[in-house]
Length: 256
Image (cartoon, rainbow, N blue to C red; front, side, top):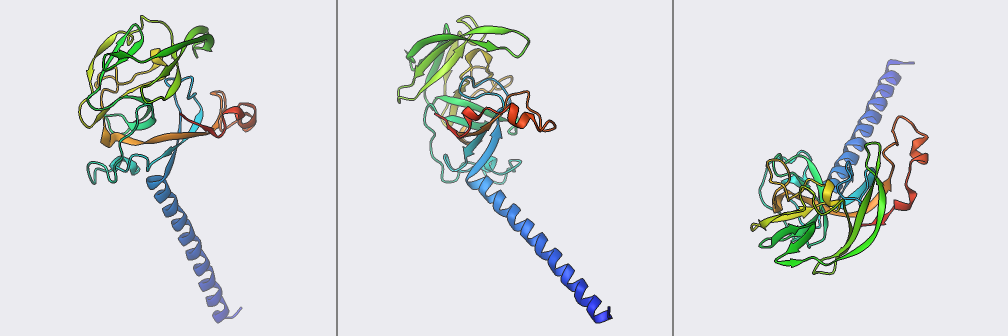
């Protein structure tokens, strides 16, 4: 091969390498824009939102639902404050937000209290501005506690004033967070609770140890759909569990 031919081959290889790098950069840039502006996936790590969200659910969150804050950007860089094109969330929405005390940890809970609302919990019943949230008793179920034993769990179907309905779990009326109150939601903040009422660290606990009131700026987005779901026993290192431990009945399930 002549020197001219070798030079042409090297130039061609370099050009091909540059094109591959450009393609990868463009793809990553598009993915980042979509993640920041439109949708972001999250995996549910705990049982705090049972029975509506299970550990191992892979959900999609709409980033545009409430506008954008600096928490919409990966690693939450403090480049601006407030929300851009902000929209107020609706009571009953299932929302991913950043934990107020560290601004980094992602939590997912249901929005119960809006700014100005008073929240009290008496015997496990949630009172909203002095009125109990109506709840319908449902048949109890047996639930694996995750600690080697099964326990009986009470179920209730709550209906918010806006008409949003959902099922909650309750282990009894004397839990640590079943008799707390006097919460007045500050302006620009929100009050969240998990659907698994006795297994959820949420706004009923002060921000130093729990969630407390969540600033509007900390909202990441609204949970829209369960895209995929696997049991806790599934492992990325055990390919057979990808099928054996899948929950196909939860695939593409809309959240409410």
